[in-house]
Image: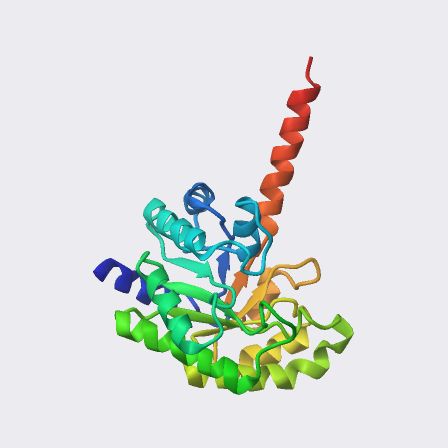
Length: 256
């Protein structure tokens, strides 16, 4: 537990506005170990990659028991802080979320991604409902004595075409403020790529801003200038690894 608490404190300290933490997302202990050896400062999973690697679809189709078991093995395989993409927490109500998080915390993880889309339904949770869900997670972490980094993800931008993103900046700021008040540690905006929006959320928002690597995202140097604190690579690493594996297999099968 002392190690977990120390790693949690260290993970928080890695989130510096203007000096973005780069997370090259892993999906299992083997990939986590390779990423650690490449020079990572922390390990983070992506739910899509983990689900597909186990033969499931994303969206909490991967059984919670496998999520917890995989997290435990990743923590045991590396010496770095580990953050797990917990999607919607595999529950709707705060009490059930607290129970699920308590089990996940027992693996030694120090961070989670927690999204505001309704995983088993449509749209996003209302502001008050999602704030209450985050508050439940914070209560569970406090009870465990772990300064858990709750990376509050909003799907506002993934759910809308890029042309509509400027009109969503205000809503995103409102969510960031409510999530911060509820106990969130960071604010994740996958899908947002325009510089004006990133700069506004990074500078006006109360939480360190996390963006996701996409083809239209500005380069890391520019993101640092915009005061971004964290850059996630999401499913990209898994896709790269599987493309290399497929190419190597095709070469092997075509060799006389």
